[in-house]
Image 1: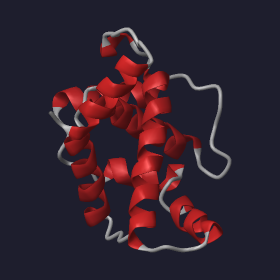
Image 2: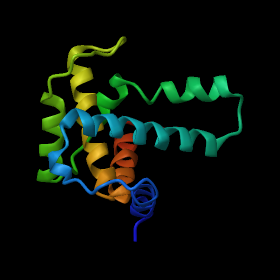
Image 3: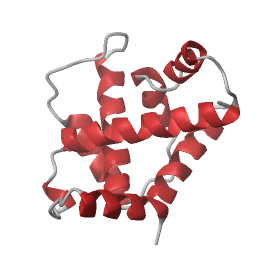
Image 4: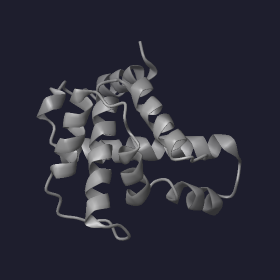
Length: 145
């Protein structure tokens, strides 16, 4: 069993979460959890690479966890399946009532779509796929964390 499914199953079992058809989740709900899982991925990479003061860790993480970088990441994706593209488009086109402080509306919408895709993959237990997409985007963008 893939590691993320073990975590998901443990959370669901411990807190008696009822199983929900993932297609029933709104794209903004998927983006909500996707934002958290992407943040966790980046924080884990940054912490694993160097033990630094918290403020330096935060400054490093902020460079990658923002709408501008996420918008670039989705533009670097050539590997998405049709299903993944559909989830991304649902997230990108969702009517959000908030916006990013330091990003254009276009970048914010692309980032929301990417987060929806990440949330979808996480809740599907496809953590390997999610991590591969993050790695591929960073490679194409020449980003080394």
